[in-house]
Amino acid sequence: MGDIIILQEHWLYNFEKFEIQDFLPGYSCFVKCVDDADPLPPSQRPRGKGGTAICYKNNIAHAIEEQQDGSSRVTVVKLNCRTKPLIIICVYMPCSGSKNADDEFKAVLEEIGEIIYKFKPTCDIIIAGDVNASIMKENLSRRDKLFLDFIHEFELHIPESNECDTYFHHSGKCSSRIDYILQSNHNIINQFVNLERDYMNTSQHDPVMALVKVSITAKQIEENNHINSKKINWEKVNRTKYQSMVYEKFQLIDIDNLDINISNVNIFTEMLCNIIDTSAKECAKPNKQKSRPRKRYWPDEIKKACCENKHHFWK
Image 1 (cartoon, rainbow, N blue to C red):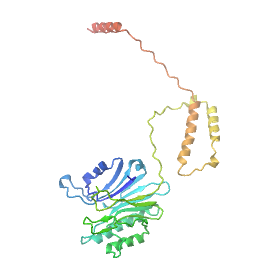
Image 2 (cartoon, rainbow, N blue to C red):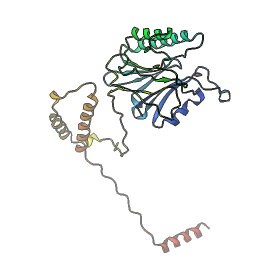
Image 3 (tube, rainbow, N blue to C red):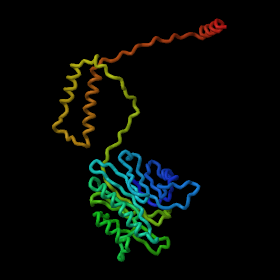
């Protein structure tokens, strides 16, 4: 599976949101439910509905920041890339049919717009989800036009291959494209794929996938090896030898030809610290460990006699 999975309509409530991790081992899940503002008790659980989630692999969790922007219909995370941060917005737009459906649709678009205004100056943005609207048909409805105007207003781009139908009615009589992945510029998504539906997939939606190539800082892995944390006794260090050794090792580094920038300065700093540390240890006199007296071995006969005498003495 992908490094980041974006879900809509998980149908979980607040008290059971963590159950989603049972189906995605190795992932951390940022889950929003329809009752987050006023959680329902388990005894009053109705039929599931709505909800959004962004799940990401644990090996990139150090580069992910979960954002608190948006309602239960909008989940936002920030991926801290080396070049430019990437904002990923998961959205589940209101369905049509109810009296105020289009007004609710417009309200969620405004909600996403505020998030774009907040992050666009400093971040790339990807918006993905079930928008319950389509711009790939001849006769556009009011909500289709609202969605199209939203795309134009924020200068969002649709991948070229994002044109196949993704929603299929159970009757088989109609289908449409209502699942979209939008990007704030043309260069974010490298590849877009419509995945074929598995026969076990009872959903009305086909999953879609996008390939995004980014560079993130590797996680610092703690080694299990024993680390010698003994302090160096500078009173016993040959300081003249130490200064000479550090100077010689520094001379071997061609600093003028090193390409030092913000992404690799930590590596260069660590190299300098290692030179100082190893030189100090080499010049320090080794600590002599005091030998403990060996425990004298007693034969079984003497040990038994000693115990008996001790017992009679106390008796």
